[in-house]
Length: 219
Image: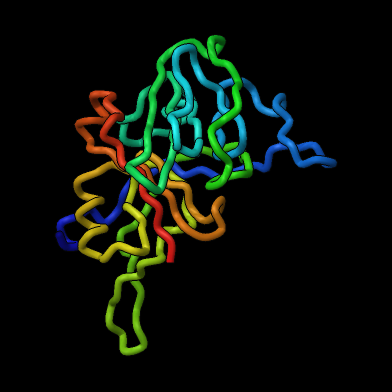
């Protein structure tokens, strides 16, 4: 796979974060600071529907309100209702769960683990944007164009170019051509390292999230 085989620009959904409230004395999360079914990353609680629990030996990463995200979807592949839940483990591909039901049926429960993303942050400023492929390259002192393995790591997004500083240029381009970035949590949250959930386009269209793969890249 080469750069010439991919589009020059990729439409994406970009987002930022708000810090969530906590008890100033003990640092515990205030459960009422976000509406039921809101979109957030990390923390010790998650809004789950009946019959769904946190996967064993996985860390809760994020919950996304798809009604809100789909309003900024430039590609039209995302569900327009329901919620996506992301759970991560370093020992496997992770798990992504989708539930398409009434918000009123959700219940706020204690999430599994808090080791990976301990601080809950509300997802904010969800918007349509563009990611350029040439942003992944830089000019060396002799003028030659070179691949920047760290480029794109600041962004938190859906869609666009795959990001993992431990992968080579050809691997990133191939992954970008074959998979959809369902979620990228960038260094705006993590400080260092990027978590990515990727899925085949046909699986996303079929709402089959069982083959979604989550990966962590860090130098």
